[in-house]
Length: 189
Image (tube, rainbow, N blue to C red; front, top):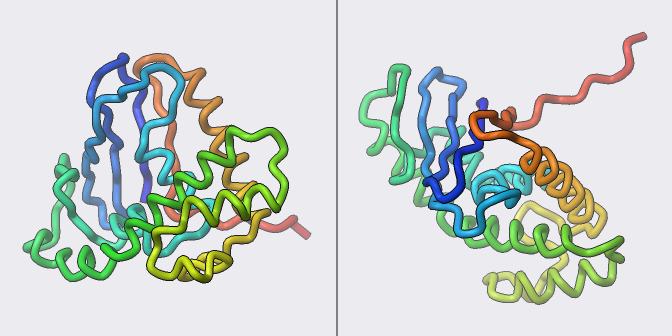
């Protein structure tokens, strides 16, 4: 799946263009950015965190699997029959994981603003940020995502890099991503 985030003039309702592997194209609407300028759009922050942490049950994995929520509008391609009806079981299955994905994005954002965060700092932030999760008593492991401080720090670094790229975009330019990430190729022998 290919996802593009166009840079719009400040205070306009943001969106992402999504082209699923089945050829259907959607526009995923976000909200008006209350903090215009260089701040990453909310859905882009999620994409970065979910990709970097390898979440298989977050927002973007759901869209790739065929979930059609209220924020998605079809803008091209041939939709499968009854896409809303077909995606309801998937949306129900992913709903409990939505809070976790949201909180993990918040955790990574908090780490991204720190200078050289230590593993202990990341663990403390995780304990605080993820305390409302049903399995919060085991903060070292949440669903299929182990909370390795190094992985959280790497995701925070990726967020910093993408925020820098976003800040340099002019109106009308965009950032594009593959979901899931293209596999990295090894050296050619």
